[in-house]
Image (tube, rainbow, N blue to C red):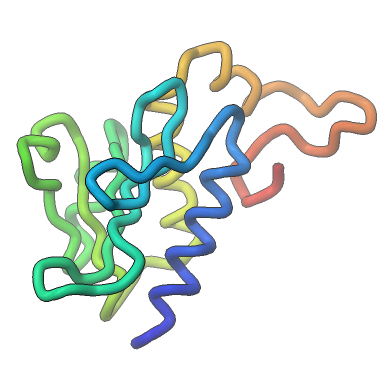
Length: 137
């Protein structure tokens, strides 16, 4: 399955629409941060001998569910102990909606409470939907 680029880009675009989220490139990887904290690891642009397409998210609530998915494993460098999981983008994947939910959960786990509150706030006149779940923002 070679549509991993499309899935990766969908997750990246979704993450960047979250309040005050921005892209950064530490260590040559692509990550999405909020308040200087990473909530989505996207890896490098192209696969290498050492890296195959995957994403990493922090899942304090859905960790067990995510780890039950084939191929998903605790993230390396000790991050798995803090609830981070690595999700391969090749082979059998969860539904894109589940992946988007996990990105949002990761954001909620690291974002300041004031920004999380913006996700849950009712839309203001002319602002459009504020909630991200279900991909609307």
